[in-house]
Amino acid sequence: MLDQGIAPPATGEDQRTPKQQSTGFGARLMRRKPVERLVAEGGQGEGGSLRRSLGMWQLTMISIGATLGTGIFVVLGQAVPQAGPAVIISFVLAGITALFSALSYAELAGSIPVSGSSYSYAYATLGELIAWVCGWCLILEYGVSVAAVAVGWGQYLNELLDGTIGVTIPAALANPPGVDGGIFNLPALLVVLLCMAFLLGGAKESARANTIMVGVKIVSLLLFCAVAYTGIRAGNYKPFMPLGLGGVSAAGATLFFSYIGFDAASTAGEEAKDPKRDLPKAIMLSLLIVTALYVLVAAIAVGAMPWGQFKDSEAALAGIMKDVTGQSFWAVLLAAGAVIAIASVVLTVLYGQTRILFAMSRDGLVPKTFAKVNPRNGVPRSNTVIVSVFCGILAAAIPLGQLADATSIGTLFAFALVNVAVMVLRRTRPGMRRTFRVPFGPLFPAIGLVMCVYMMGSLDVVTWEVFGGWMLVGLVIYFAYGMSRSKLATEGAELLEPVAVESADAGDPKAATKVAVKAAAKGEAKAVEVKKAAEPKKTGEEPKKAAEPKPAAEPKKAAGSAKAGAKPAAKPRPARPGKNAKGRKKSKRRR
View 1 (cartoon, rainbow, N blue to C red):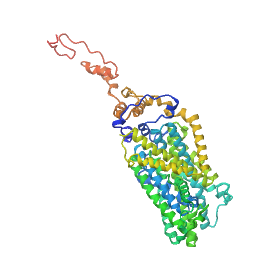
View 2: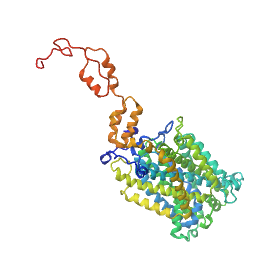
View 3: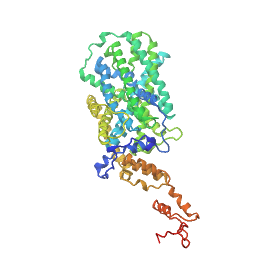
View 4: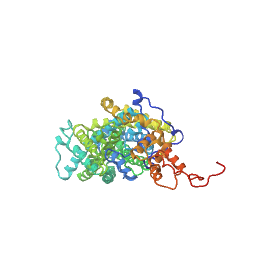
């Protein structure tokens, strides 16, 4: 098997030889990367490789870490004014939409366990252009999400500083530009750089730090529920839906970006110990835990404070704790938990962003520097530094509301493509082994697709304009850079054509590897031949043995060796009179 048995075996209809690839412009845009090759290249970067060090528990914590905290600690103040107390329904709506997409992610993560997440899934099923568009959306989703979360981190940091030492960061340095006198959000930049330092230490070390932070945030939210529950007033739930169903949908679309956590888990496919088994479980378990906590906290929050007071509050939960208890101690305690909780979101989402760029760089669609790996600890160092600095500056310079909506539309678009990818892969590779299958065939992926499109339609015109501009820039970069430098463009002609696996040079490991990649395009039916081609053959040694003086050469072996590509064996010594080449008496029948 390729890649130590991780590549999905092809059976039945999957054992087919690809047709000769067309070289037309449209065909170049629709060229797909074989699943087997995606998996075989897993973890390999420039100058080193990623390390498989993450188990199911760590993958689940990465998923929860990237999800839990964003929507409840930061964006609640943006969503409640849109939906009122019905923001509870908005969380449920966003959670159900995420659930259908999560099912599709779980199936693909178990079948194609690679770092690129939905970008790689699209590359294997929908073609290079769609894969680029998906990857470009993920860059928007992850990069802007890091910035959006970091913006809210500064607000909770000020709450913590005010409650402990009575000092706060000046508004000019603590708020985004144009918000309450803000000029440059310094805390947002600092938290991104702090998380960058963790990531540079290695995936295993980062996962350990994230697990501790996730535990702190869960305890903080449960503490909030216990304290704020005493302040619930029935009148705060009336009117329940003051802005109608449209407001609920708009709030759900805004909140949706806080559900990207399971996507972050799927980006760890090349660093998971057993991705085919653990990734589907981690995705589903994390989504259930996060959705339950979101709905519980939102229900208690809107019951403890009138929904009109949530406007422009980026540290709403700390304010509720202070109002309910009349003491600053509880607010300070929650602010401390929020500072740690939001930092874990930044850490895990930043991790996901670097791994997506790693996969795109390995495919040749973005510069090679993003695929360079430090051989000492298996970290894409240059990638991590570049992404962190960019996201930190973005967080310090742009207001939260615009960032959250831009992230939501990128997330929804990527999730929609994942649902399509599941339906396409079910049709094109029906016999491929899947460790998890979306129930009810194509029905659930189709529902997930429709819900994603519906929620995208709930976002405002400005968000669509930003998204359209971002897509236009991405297409320009693809046609100017990625299309001609793609590995499928430079190597695809020979990688996708049928090849004679047996003709590999057995003495050259590079040649054997090249044959393995070529054979991957033809399906797993050639895997056994690839293994044989990669092993050194004995024919290379036979000429030496044949050249050594022996009583007599063996004609049959010499002929076999020459057939296999060995040099001709030494000439046999002439037979003595009355005897054959082996020194035996001649048979009367043959005379």
